Length: 115
Image (cartoon, rainbow, N blue to C red; front, side):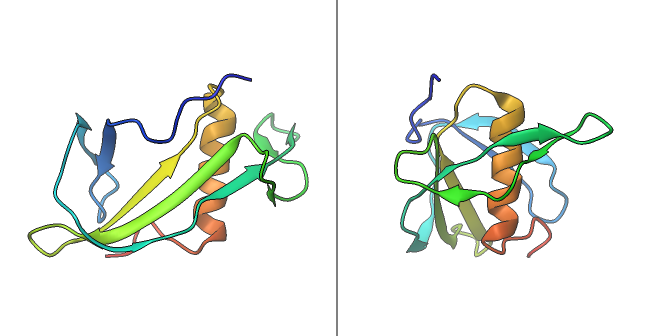
């Protein structure tokens, strides 16, 4: 399984209130960092439901050798808006990577609707 490093200098970003993508990629931005979470690494198994949608088979499990790696950074932009940056390692399987991101996001209690 090929993975990409989690410290890529390009970041896609979304507007918190709408989830609308604000730009393609940025190489840098200002952020007053308020917290950096410890990295978490996971393994998972997958299956398809009766409608063919990908879902987890069992639970997302922490494992130091797992291919999925996440780290959250919280802070504020210079104009005072709250910001959440999620660093993650990608495996190259977009469907698996996105399902793991959604699952991790819910597991740690974040919401795209927070403002």
